[in-house]
Length: 112
Length: 115
Image (tube, rainbow over all chains, first blue to last red; front, side, top):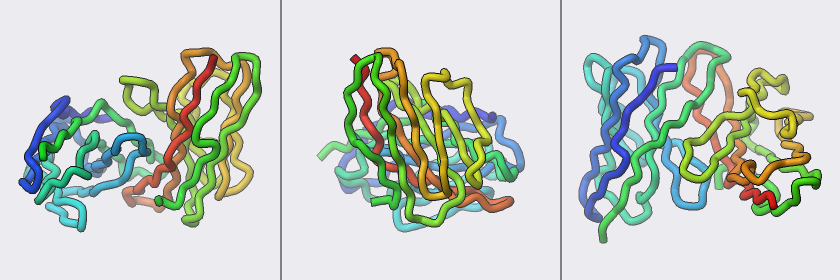
């Protein structure tokens, strides 16, 4: 499985944008880039995914580098409820290979 | 509320007990998963069921026995566990379609303590 590299922790001030980086230099052409987050005492929740183009949804934006070897999850205006561990995961589009391989993620702390 | 429920939410058991964890999804998904999250370790995939067939078993000890009687229910039967098996056990489900990224929906987990 292709690996991802994320910083262990980041801090951000409330109501400011947050950019969470992820490196995936060994990504293959069939790998989607997924982001999940895990709030304290909860199971992980899906945030966003993309393949080649930048993506936006109600939770966040995903900016994907042109060579696809890195990506950035953008929270446009962080709130205290965004404090969580954020996981960047590569998921193959090959049918029958839907394994999510979680790393250690980035622990995001929001400062009031 | 993700549409995936797990019971019980907390479980304390002795090493000689037999217990079962239950997971139920109301999303019409065709794949279900068991994950284990130990303290300070990444989530580990344990089992995958796709269309009610087990398609993945990540070298999990036989003291963990999964069961998927239908596409909506998943069980994890536990027997003669060890204290190091204490962890958060998470269930997830997804709808697998060919060529598509399959978002997984997670339950809240069962916090298991083995004494």
